[in-house]
Image (cartoon, rainbow, N blue to C red; front, side):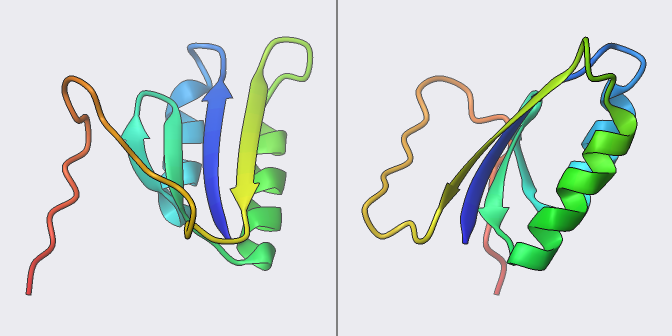
Length: 87
């Protein structure tokens, strides 16, 4: 499945959340990640982020799609993470 994950964590926890998300997804922009992920890995990332977050202060939003067939990604302005393809 394809997911877009967005988080808003307190300043002291942002770095740890960033490292966890980069293990599974592609960094797109500050606190925004996307990519294909298995159901098992999605469950893992949810558990790992839940362990870091403070429930009353932090938040995570995950949009999940069965496929990207009907999606379009458009970037206006500066692309924070250039996705180069090397052969």
